[in-house]
Image 1 (cartoon, rainbow, N blue to C red):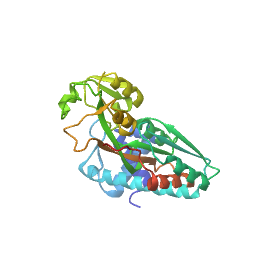
Image 2 (image 1 turned 60 degrees about the horizontal axis):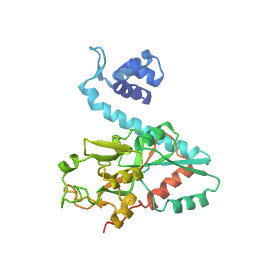
Image 3 (image 1 turned 45 degrees about the vertical axis):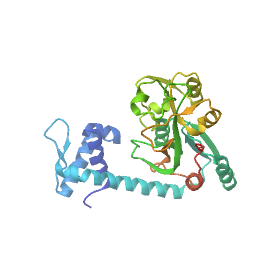
Image 4 (image 1 turned 120 degrees about the vertical axis):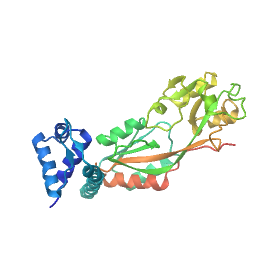
Length: 300
């Protein structure tokens, strides 16, 4: 055998952690074991993977070519083992679904009712966290499935599937100076205070952030209250503000940089392929993928 998974793991971890000692701590092995695994891999492949002439090992040109292939091999192995573990598991007692607070599934009740009829002994727990928290909890194994807005920098251990799109609108008080403009540019938005959902200040969130002058809030309802008081503009899900638009209490700003009255962002379901999914969790994942309808309202 020219390369074992243990050797590849030592190679990849040494690169990602930056040293043999850090890799040893992460893999809970002795530093001598990690360096021996890499050295043996180099002998087996007849290639030098790391330049050890400096304080910390750096990839050689050959190492740079092979590192991505090693990462892919380890990822595929982890997926294979997760699927095998799931097939051997008994029916779980509980499935935990976490959703970002600004996302609503219009037919979630129907999906959960059908799931409960199929798995009457399995409890369903639905929680609300920010996108970053959801990804962390899934990696830790505390949450089974997550629904978040357009993940960026998603951890390598997570997989994802699109469920649809969420419509976002920029809104202001109907008598604000922004509301009087026939077309609002990005520069104009930056000149006015923005009421920002805390979730929007997370790098994993794709809700629009434009102004350097920010007041942060935790919920869409708090943002609506401040915008209604003409204290700034806000970018919010259309379903949260549609009724206020229809009554004239708020106005959608016509943005120069969007071709529609709203922006659309992908809503994705995420899960870990390293933590085996039980039979019921896999079924809920399938049901959500096939049937989930993202709640949006129609702009008139």
